[in-house]
Image 1 (cartoon, rainbow over the protein chains, first blue to last red):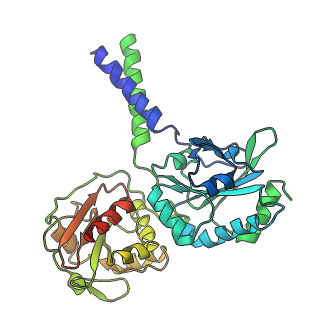
Image 2: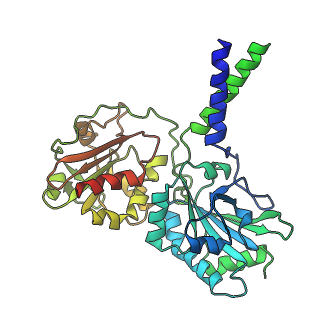
Image 3: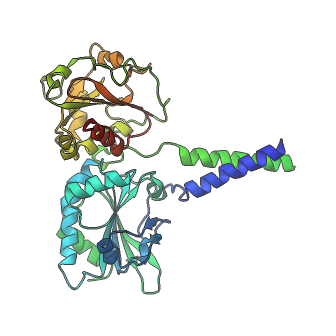
Length: 191
Length: 202
């Protein structure tokens, strides 16, 4: 009996560990904390890869983005408020990219909670999103982020010593590109 | 002692796998904050289809949220039709399905398809619920009375009176070409539906 059960138990454990590496957090990430473990694929698109300052292939973690601060939006193509905010978030990207003082210091990414690559692509095309979006089809990252409602915004400050911390989180209530940029500059110490 | 350790290990593994595999977050858009009724995990499918691919799609006429009556036969010879049955307004997965279709209008157009959203809820409920989704480009139909009659005719009425989460693709000759009676706890991936529409072109 034992000889049957041991391999079974090991198989189930391995499945849990391999397929679902990010275990659920019981609350959303908060200001002052570090990010949960989020592994994202290095974009294949060279422009996106270049935008994030990444090289090679495989997976990367958000603090590896070459910048002083990263704005992370957890969104869904199925979320009406994410749809409504999309043009304003695009405008935020353009404000940053058009300002030579901050262009290389702040980067923006989106993570599509429960969205397949196809669904993320529909969102990207519909709103002409100019920054990298990543699918999270099985809600793995979303679970690691405490199953936040959407859209959820996080500003992550990357420190000189290689550490990082979340300096701002916000559920919805997107105030428009200019106000949000002002907020990002303040909380990340870039002003 | 060793046996006990083994049982503990199995128990932990079981709990971990259930935890990881349980259907998760839907209806999380802030648009619905505080208004989504959590239904828990349900029996994936609880009905037996009464139609199959290749059959003529049974005709129906139902009232829509906009006030007009919509008949399936109206589209015969004009448009491909996607019927999207969702179980109930104000529930997690359903609230996270049509808003996605709402931004995919150009893809439906590409396949010359109209989408008909359907539930067994009444019109006032559907009105309030779909208002949270923004302006929908497709008709939303109420199969409320006689209760669930169309869902029942297609064989997607569950034993508790709500419909399955089901998609039917009907070509412009009125023939059913694709059926997905989906696990009620999960949202059908958009690419599966679009793949079915793509096949109509062949």
